[in-house]
Image (spheres, chains in turn purple, yellow):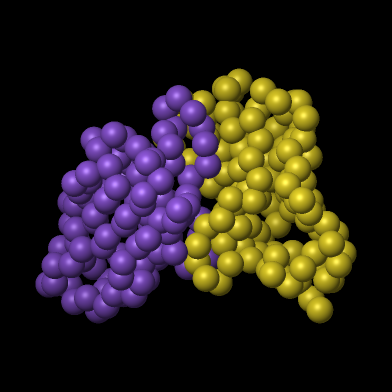
Length: 115
Length: 114
């Protein structure tokens, strides 16, 4: 199983809503990532979890709240988003960047629209 | 800070022909890794090829090969016998050894004409 599964694939939410994005992998990877990708742009790193601990937060606004309940699951909780937060949100995982620079496996993303 | 530059926003190639996508990077580190990722309309980022900086031999994966020029900090991707399924956005990426941060270039949109 070399899949990173993201749900939902599409999400439309209002600015006062609370929603969550989910990412799951069963490859035994211990590093998991959230990226934000605007149209025709490269992915931008938001958060990195390494061994279930938050290791990188790229100065992301607090309306985005990551959570890593276990080594297979990564969530991104959304609250009070702005229309400019509309983007493709990509999850990725890798064995571990710290010692072995292996490839990152990406999910298909969640297309988020904030109205 | 490390940067990755892809100077070709768009490229096109005829089916069965060969195309080369350019990538340059800037780093003062000696331990790093370079990648080419492909993102088709399905949105999923797929690893195409990977190169360790300490390896002099250019990486090859079937129809995909790289020209890694370490002194020039250049990492181009050659696609041979192009197929319609190769049409996608291609991103060059860099990661410093021991780092968790993947740095992407702005991407090159490849069109394959039948």
